Image: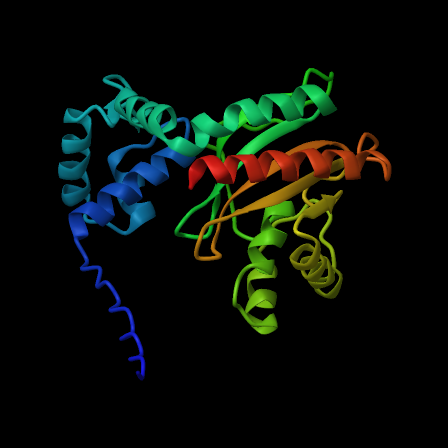
Length: 260
């Protein structure tokens, strides 16, 4: 009997909701400006009508997602954001399940270990973290967000993407590096990552720092998360890296089995 081809999946149409889009833009902007901003500064930065901006801010303040300093009239993120983030981190399966694995990696190898999520916007967010006991530690926190294709996780994102070399080059040119590799050298490392199933950034993202990442792939073959270790490049010697990678891949596989 002939089989029928499955009809193509209907693309979900996302309708624009200006009030929601503007609210999110305000929250993101305030998250990037720790000192707070006034209404005019926010409106100017986001090209909003000041009165519209003020009305949205008042709603966000009433929901405790934003707070206003009565003296300076500057707005900053409020405690309601912390409660929302806490509920995600506590109830989110990945962060909760990854933490023991990260603690084991950090303790066994004297590295900073991170559980990272690839967002729908193709950025990278740290969801779980275990810091090294060594004198040097990578300065990052849960909730830290990095641009796409950066560092070791970025190489995996490129390796598992379906983008052409030209598309990757265009995105590569927007990356901020401490010591940028050439595109051809970076692309070769991306190809290596695809073959061996892990990636490494040595001294590119931050000079003196080595970052190793292993992928977590869902049932559809999509890269959703990575396990990451980072530390001084002098610590990640040719003999040490294979041992770290072996433990990371073992932890990643066990984590994927739990997440299924």
